[in-house]
Structures are given as structure tokens and as C-alpha cells.
Amino acid sequence: MGLIKWEKPDPLDNLTHIQREMSDLFDFLSSTPQMEGYVDVEYPPIIVSMNEESVFVRAELPGIKVSDLDIQVVNDILTIKGERKLTLDPAKISYLRRERDYGTFARSIVLPEKVDAEKVTASYKNGVLTVNLPTAPESKPRQVVIKKS
Image 1 (cartoon, rainbow, N blue to C red):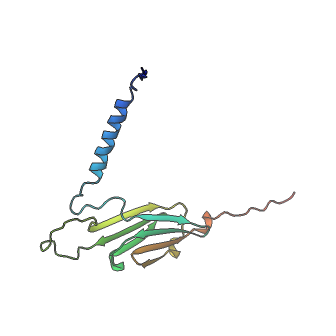
Image 2: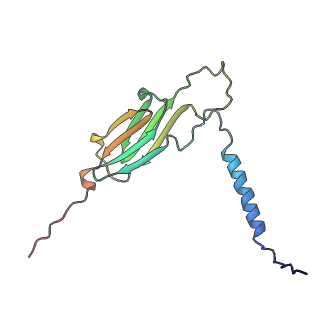
Image 3: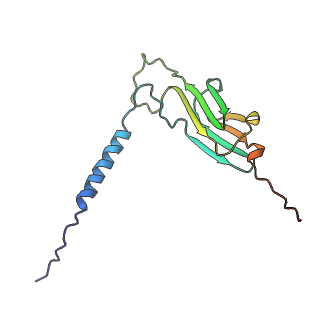
């Protein structure tokens, strides 16, 4: 005859179950369709990088014309504004699925370094906006010479 080992139930099992249920609820809420005309705060998605000379911001903006974009640098804050226009008449179509929003958007990024606003350049290719923001001379490290006395 074999022995069966009895294990005391873990009191945290119930908390783990509740946590899993809450996680499922938040996943459901975040996947629900958004309101008409609503643009997510994190649009456009960006990548910010830098080297010794410049800060680079790349923003994904597929389907947007250059003429519908406005880029400004004020007090070391880069702002990208624009509009994604609806190309089809909404009265003539019914959506089966729509994952791209339309309308105006704006995104501001606090830059990690002081930049020379007069030398900022931008290019737009294949739906990707690249902004080159040269760092200001005063933000670059400077070697200090020590005088012998």
C-alpha cells in the first residue's frame, strides 16, 4: 500500500488567481477599439538617440505628407505636430477593422542635451521623419587646462 503525501495549500494561490484575473481585464480593456478621432498619446512612435555631436529623433509617420507636418524646437523641447487625413469618404465605406487613427496629433520630447536650434535639420523618407538636432557648444564637454604655479 502506497502513501499519499498531503501538502498544505498555499494561501497566496488566491492572490495569484486575482492578479491573473486583473491582468486579463486590463489586457481586454487596452485592446478595445478606441473612440472615433481619438489619437493615442504615444503617437507617433519615436526613437531618440545621440552621439557626441547631435541628438537624433526618428518618428514613424506612414502615409503623412510633409506639408501636413510641423516641427518646432523651443527651449530644448522638440514638438512634432501633424495631421493624418482620411482618404476615403466615411459615408461610402464600413470598416471591418481599423487600427490607424486619423486626425491631428502632437508629440513633445524633452531633449537630453541643449541643442543649437538654428542648425536643426529634418528629412522624411519612406514614412520615417528624422530630425538631427546638433548639440549646443555650451553642452559639449570642455577640457580644462591646469596651470602649474
